[in-house]
Amino acid sequence: MSPPVEPVASDPTLPDHTDVVIIGGGIIGVTTALFLAEKGTAVTLCEKGCIGGEQSSRNWGWCRTMGRDKGEIPLAMDSLRLWRDMNRRTSRETGFRQAGVMYLCETEREIAAQEAWLSEASQYQVDARLLRGSALDKALPGASHAFTAGMHTPSDGRAEPAIAAPAIAEAARDHGALIFTNTAVRGIERSAGRISGVVTERGRIACGAVVLAGGAWSRLFAGNAGLDLPQLKVLGSVFRTTPLRGAPEMTAAGSVFAFRKRLDGGYSIARRNANTAEITPDHFRLLSDFLPRIINNRNEIRLRIGRRSWDELRIARRWNLDEATPFEAVRMLDPKPKQGVLDEARKVLSRAFPAFAGMKIAESWAGLIDVTPDAVPVIDQVSHTPGFFIATGFSGHGFGIGPGAGRLMADLVAGDRPAVDPTPFRLARFARTTAA
Image 1 (cartoon, rainbow, N blue to C red):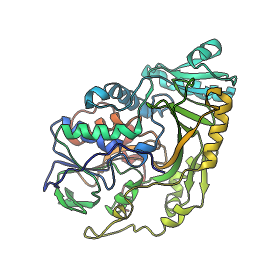
Image 2: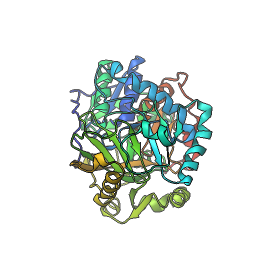
Image 3: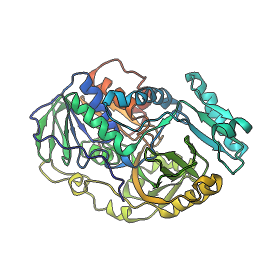
Image 4: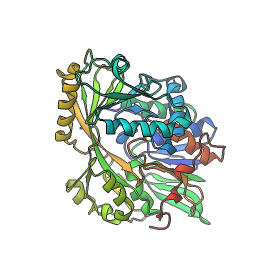
């Protein structure tokens, strides 16, 4: 079941030309649109379904620096600064609250892992601290389980996925961006090797730049455009509760559960470290790219044969721009959640925090997460196609770092000095940067 998402109406008339076309109306696409529009750039965003309809409304809603890859930390910190101002910037509610985030530890091994991260991250002046004893109990009261320690970052926060992307899209429109829903982009056009336009299901738009922010669809689109993008999909399941009293205000996770308070007083809850990957043909095509990560994270990724395994065998990988595409056949990825995984999270969380014992589940859902071999996104221009930019592969981190990623992408497209160093997000770090 898809969580309800705040609707965004489509503009009525497709433009003949624009400066930049953004493909995808998730958190990355809409933030890129906002920051480009604020620069005075003519922006047209095309979304094959509804704004925020896929993983951007289905994630946990965490906005954190803690636990990030070292290369992502400056981007995460920039995103948090932007999140804190996002309600004012958009003149709308995005749900952001700075309530802190904590990773709870039960074993010395878990503590050592958190301390190792903190040692690496300290160069960025993060405010994360390892708490024990009474300091831990004071920061996160209500636990019945004797957690040994907790890594706490008070400056981290949370936002509301179902309303954030739509709010940012509407703010981009306030600054002149055009927003089109149910409008799939079929492909890019080139002139003298450069981007010259896109073809949508509703017609052509001439432009000088294209940003592909297609989430789980990005590899398929890139492949038809001649780029072998190393990206796979994993499935994450989440459920939400009805309003609940007495549970923690802070966002937190143990080794098995993760929870985040919602604006409505309920909680979004997930099974931590248990994403499901249904084996598809791309798993074999990209085996050499992803094998090290699969081995290193073998206890966190559950490989399965499922419906998607067979569905993706039938998906076309090549098409002409005057043909209907897979993006028009499937407007929204709406996979079923793994209830067994969610039951694990519910049972362990209820034991650890008695306030959750009487929780009532309102609904559950799942989303497909776009992942790269190193779990770090690509935010870059395609070197062999000037004007073609990609922002994808956020590996479950995209919502929290969305504002920073959108601003970085906007800076790259506009040729402005980037707010953070884009080097960690270069496409060239992967071997697959040539024609598919």
